Length: 245
Image (cartoon, rainbow, N blue to C red; front, side):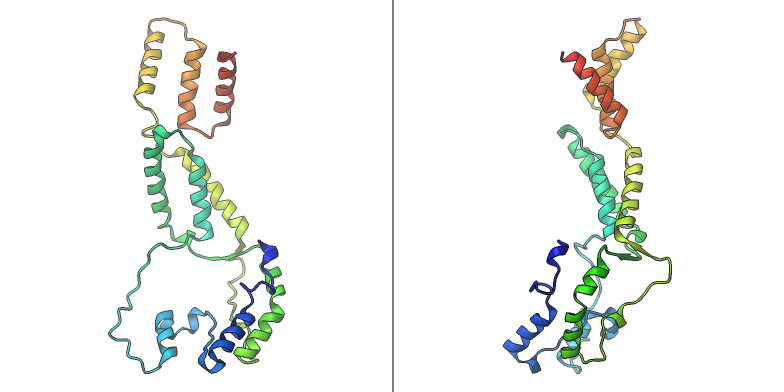
């Protein structure tokens, strides 16, 4: 994707977009603004937009309450959700149980404020900034005046609080992946599995020797409970190779 993020791409050519709008509607009919939360009137983009139409516009009758629907995921939240999705890849017979578990876990994670906070620096950010430096200077000079600068609006965090996005997302993913297998496995042991466990227990009680098929059944159940276990998968494959020979 990075190769497409270039000034020649109309999607990212802010100067070309502004020129097109000015050419069609007239420069005097266009008001271009930089997206800066701290510069918005009352810190609210809605009120800021209305005041740009008319400073005397009465907004008292409008509902300006805040709410959120269908919020976008942050990079950290997406990494946590991905770890959950990849940790449980079970058969259809457990689909409903694990869909409910995953949904509930994600809802709880969405309330974790630390996954929404902080400045996350994207990879190749400096490269992109350098590519657009000349275009941005021309755009700002033409439509905002020579004293404006995008760099002057960048607020630097105190030292030690800015991290590379890839590194932080990797940490979040690893933590969630490590914790997810410890989650309750309710619903994994179904009626058939309960019957199998009962029969094997009775066989042991009666002194009957267990078969490789019994070992496979127990290992298959272990695989349901811990689908990411390497040793379990290794043994299950070995048993199946012998039984299918």
